[in-house]
Image (cartoon, rainbow, N blue to C red):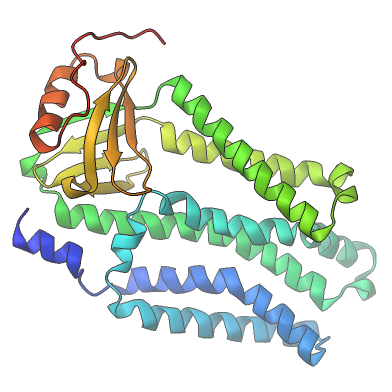
Amino acid sequence: MSNDKREFLQKPERLDTSFRVIAGAYVAALITPTLLLSIVEQFRLSNELLVIGVFGAIGTTIAAGVAWQVAHLGKIVILLNRSWMSWLLPLIGIVPVFVYFSDVIRYPAYIIVNPEATTVESLIGFLGFIFGLATVCLGELLVSMARNRVANAMIDDKAIDIEWKAGWTWIDQFKLLSGMVVCTSFFVVMIIGYFGWVEATFSRAVIVPVGMLLVVLILIANNTSSKRTYRITSDGLEQRGSVQSRLFTPWEDIDGFTVTNRTIVLHRKGLRPNIRFSRRDVRLDEQKIITKLQKYTKQRNASHNAVQFED
């Protein structure tokens, strides 16, 4: 790895305006409704126009403050380049979506049926739901921008050793989705037990949020396991998603690889999820890929010659 690339990983350049604006908007959309709700309760505000004005002022202040604060925090792009960030940042936005879900139905109903019955709390909940959806989109965009910056700095298109396209096996996809459903269910049960919402879980009102959560989990699992382009260079491995989102992993972060009957797995150091792809998708170039991986990392098993594709 060249000194310039190594220096980028250790001390990335100053972040540009677009990245800072998105980062500020993400944080503002996430925490402004909660802060406003506490202010309304503290000062007993009841005027909707005043509340909307305060909402705008708080959101603008937070966005500007975060944008200014992260200007010189170039290392944030390295943090967002972590694999788990691709689902953590958008998933955080799901929290206010579920918290304020009832208000997104209640507030418009009050406006139509009985405008005098509306409350500023239901207005804030309505705004919180909308901005929660915005947080999901902004989180995805922020991670994509950070990853592309790292990949652009580290990848030289003229120095690609080998390139291929592959996805996960259906067995790995099923295991991923099952694990996500189990972990999410455990987390939801803990929340229900803590807040005493046991009776509410058996009402029809939970069908929509549960359905939304299941859709989100399926989308995350599908995005994680879908086919993507892999490119090997002397500096590391690049992954390109279907929406031009790029993820660069230096060889220093990969602790060997394993070849199983169905999958090639690259083991990353620490608690980071492994990189895996189906052998069936690369059966024509498999030996070339394994040779290149052996060149830059160590193989944990030597029994890869017997190629089997029974899915």
